[in-house]
Length: 176
Image (cartoon, rainbow, N blue to C red; front, top):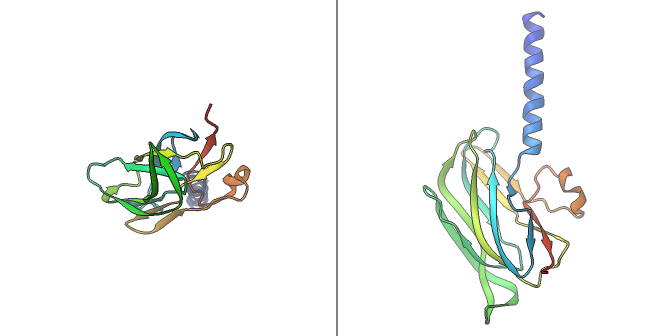
């Protein structure tokens, strides 16, 4: 094989590899099923940066019906729990909740593209959520160079894999 053909071959392999890795590697939830009316530990797995650039911020939007959100501190990172009003009122251990954490932001750290890490929330999934549906946590990953918006929520969860930027999701199960 000539040097020119060899370089073309290596270039083609690199394009296929990069395309495949970017299409299949996205932020996901470690636990992909959760029971309504119970606590849920949401572990967001970040497998890479943005096109080779280190991750510097993760923002997670908390969906309606998810309450008692407590982010796990992460050494080397700042964490902010943004509070706001809920669309509905929720009963939680005898209290009526009308507001709480609506977004969590980890920032100030640096996760190199060659490493993965996990960002964790403790939550409670209210009885207002519907079993046998998917619950999505739109997530924005900011990097030194670029941003990946994992915010696509499919109209049909059976076709979630068709999205280039799928939001991390969990299948909701009925309480036994």
